[in-house]
Image 1 (cartoon, rainbow, N blue to C red):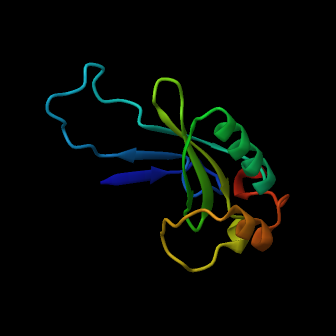
Image 2 (cartoon, rainbow, N blue to C red):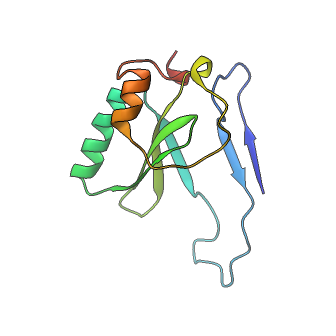
Length: 122
C-alpha cells in the first residue's frame, strides 16, 4: 500500500513516500491531497531546539523513534501534519527492523551524540 522512492545518490531512507488511500465516502470538499511533509535537521541538538519551539507554539502533536530516525510531529495552522526528523547515520543503523517507539531524546543523544550529523546532513 506504499511506495518509497529515493533520488539517485541519496543516502536517506526515502525522499518521497506515496501511499494508497481508501476512497473516503463522502470525499472531503478539497478532495484527496497532501497528507504529510517532512524536514530533516542536521543534528539531534537541532531536533531538541525544534521540539522546544514547536511546543512553545502549541503545534507539537507527537514524537517517535523509528529506529532509522527520530521524529517530531506537528500541525500547521491549517491542520496539515508535518514531521521534523533526524536520520541515524547509515553506518550506525543496526538490525532492528521497522518500528515505532516513544522518542527518548536524552537516550538518542547519549547513543549518537547531540552534534553528530544525521544521514542527510552531508
